Every structure is written in structure tokens, then in C-alpha cells.
Image (cartoon, rainbow over all chains, first blue to last red; front, side):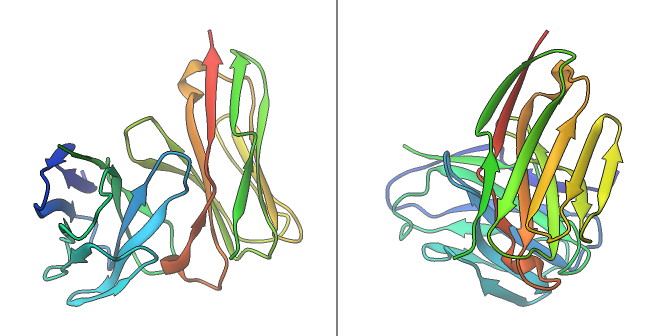
Length: 112
Length: 113
């Protein structure tokens, strides 16, 4: 079955540590996105990528980094510069930039 | 900045009852998406509306976009416990650009058996 897979489901970060969230899709979608979801706030875009080897900052990119070396993969690194990383992170993809988004099941990141 | 307002914030209904969730923008929208989310899980696509006056249905869920393309409603007929979850609307405030979707805060729905 085609879909978008996020791992791990739960992740804990220690002070000063970088952590990487995985996002893989086998839908052959060109565009991929990372969102952050906090209670009481709408989804906020962190980074997006329209094609391989290219990505752009979203609304809250500070403290995060991404790469898009392969069409099917779009990992997100939460760096130590992100001072409030506790949130639910959602990865999404779409065939092109103007069609509906398909979401992964999310990763809950917490700080130890 | 443009925002999407969802109402109500939360809703508790008895199984079998009908309900409506609204999503309102101050500006014209070029695409309106409805998603459902179970707590701690990803978003499941329900429907997409693009044209003023458009209406779509899937099983017992109907979504409409008004003529001005500034308000959408999601209506559930004869609600069931399986309808429980968080309903989110997302919208494209520009023409065909998913990079800048805006999102409502969600409506939490509980259905009592």
C-alpha cells in the first residue's frame, strides 16, 4: 500500500541534543512538507520541498533543518537552537504544489 | 495576517443527531480542505472544495463552500461514535499554492452512544 511513514512515533530529546525525525513516502509525490502542531494553535509550516535537492523555509524554520536528497525522503532535524521543541510533528506530501496533502501519522517530540 | 476561524471549538452530541461545523475566512479562498484527526494521529483527508457554491458528500458527511468562497460548513447526518475526532479546515489564500495553506484551530467532536 502507498503511503507516508513517519518514525519514530515518540522521541525524547536531551538538552543540547540534535534529533532527526524521519519521513518517507512511496506515493511518488513531488512536494513534501513539515508541520508543527501545538495545543491551541493551528498547524504551522516549518519547511517544504517542491523537488529533490531544493527546499524552502516555512513560517517557523528557526531551529530546524531539512534535506531532500531523494524524492521519497524528507527528514527533519530539530537542533539544539530550537528552545521549545516539544510538539507533535506532522509530515505531508502532495503530487504537486496545488493538490491535497497526504499526512503521516506524526511524531511526538518531548524534552527530557 | 489572514486566519481561518472554526466554530464551535468543541461539540458533544448524542449518537444519531445531526451537527454542523463552520470554517470562516475574512478573505476569498482558492481551495478549502476538510480533514479529520484522531488524537495523536495524522490528518485524514475528507473533502476539497474549490468553486463558489460547491457541495460535496462522502457517506454521511457533506461539505459546502459559499458563493463568495469565504465560508465553508461541514455537516454530519445521524452522527455515530466513529465520527468522533478533531475536524480541521485548511485553505489556500492564494491561487494554487499549497506552500502557504492556512489552518483553523480545529473542532473537537465527541459522540455519545
